[in-house]
Amino acid sequence: MPLTVRVLLALVAGLALGLPLAQATGSFASGLLAVVGPVGTLFINAIRMTVLPLVVSSLVVGVASAPDPRAVGRIGARALGLFVVVVGLAAAFGIVLGAPLLARLPLDPAAVEALRAGAAGSGAGAAEAARQVPSLGAWLVSLVPANPLKAAADGAMLPIIVTTLAFAAALMQLPLERRGPVVRLLEGVMDASLTLVRAILTFAPAGVFALSVSLAATMGTGAIGAVLGYVAIVSGICVVFWLAVLYPLGVLVGRVPLRTFAQAALPAQSIAFSARSSLAALPALVESARDTLRLPPAIASFLVPLAVTTFRAGAGIGQTVGVLFIARLYGVDLEAATLLTVGVTAVITSFSVPGIPAGSIIVMVPVLMAAGIPVEGIGILIGADTIPDMFRTTTNVTGDLAAAVVLADVERPPRQAGPAAS
Image (tube, rainbow, N blue to C red; front, side):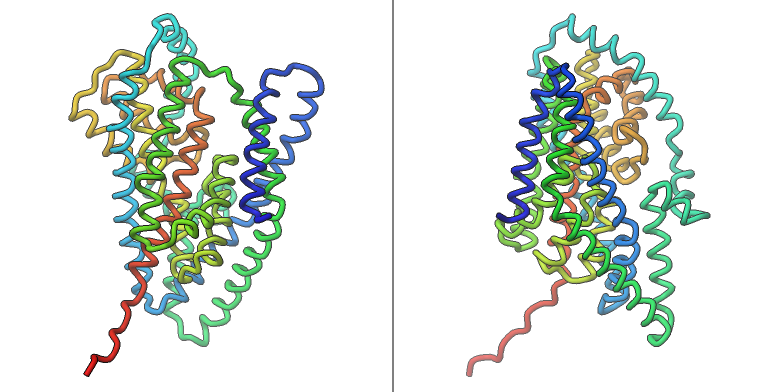
C-alpha cells in the first residue's frame, strides 16, 4: 500500500478514535492520550530537526545550480508577484464567500453574550500580545540578524533565509575552484537531510495517527452554534479555494496532470493538516517537488523553502473571515471601503505573521481597531482556532506546491521548432 494512502488512513483513524476520547473521563482515556501525545510530538520534532540543514543547504545549492545566477533573482521576483496575486485571491474568496454565509448564520442572543463574556479575558491577552508584535521598521531590521545562530535557535526562518541567500550570492562571486568544494559539501548535506527525511516519513502513518488522536480529543464536539458555523465556513472556503484556484493553478497553468499533482501534494497536506505547521511539511514538499514532480533544482531547492516561509494563502482566508465573523457578533456593519482595507491588510500581513501562538490571528488586531470592532473578539477566534488552522495550513502547503509547478513551467526553456517541411 502506498505511503500516501497509509498516511490518509491513519489521519482518518486518528480522528475517529480521538473524538470519542474527548467525551471520556476514565483513566483508560487519559492514559491512552498520555501515551499517544508524546508519539505525535516525537514525530514532529524529528521532522523539524531536518528543517534547518535542509533549508540552508537547499537554498545555497539551488542558487549555485541555476544555469544563470540572474535566474534566481528572476524566479524570486516572479514568485513574489505570484504570491501576492494568490493571497489576494484568497482574501477576495474570504470576503465574497464569507460575508453572505456569515450573514445567514443564525445567532442566539444569549449565546452571543456568552461568547463575548468568554472572550474578554483571552481577547485582552491578545491585545497585549499585539502590542508586542514588532512594528514594520523593527520587522525589517530583524530580517538581517546580528546573530544568525540565535535566529536559528529561535526558529526565525525568514532571517535565516536572508542570511543564507546573502551567503549564496557571495559564494557565487568566487572562482569555481574556490566555491566548488563548498557547494559539493552542501549538496552532501542536502542529500543526507533528504535521506533522513525519507527514513522519518516511513513512520508518518504512526505520527499522523498520534497527532490526529490528540487533536480530535482536544477539539472534541463541544463547539456549537455560532462558533461551529464559523469553523465550518472557514474550512469550507479553504476547500473551495483548493478546488477553484490552487489545483487548477497547478494542473492548468503548471501543466501537471491532476493525479500527479494530487499525489505529490498529499504527503505534505497530511502532515500540515495534523501538525498545523507549514515548516513541518517542508521536507515532504521538497521530496515531492524533487522526486515525484521532478522539478528543476532551482525550484525544488530554492523556491519551495522560500515559499513555505513566506507564502501563506490560508492567511488571506482566515483573516478576512475572522474579521467578518467578529463584526457579525458585535453587530458592526462593514462598508465596501472597510472590506477593501481588510483584504489589503490581510495580503500584507500574510508575509509577516509573527512566530508566536495564534500569530495569524493577532495580526488582525489593527484591522479590528480601524474598523471599530472590539479587539476582545479575538479571544473567540483563538478559542475556536484548532480546526480552521488545520485547513489554513493545508491551504498554505498546497499553494506552495502549486506555485512551484507554475514557476517551473514558466522557467522551462521553450521547445525548439523542428526543421521546416520542404
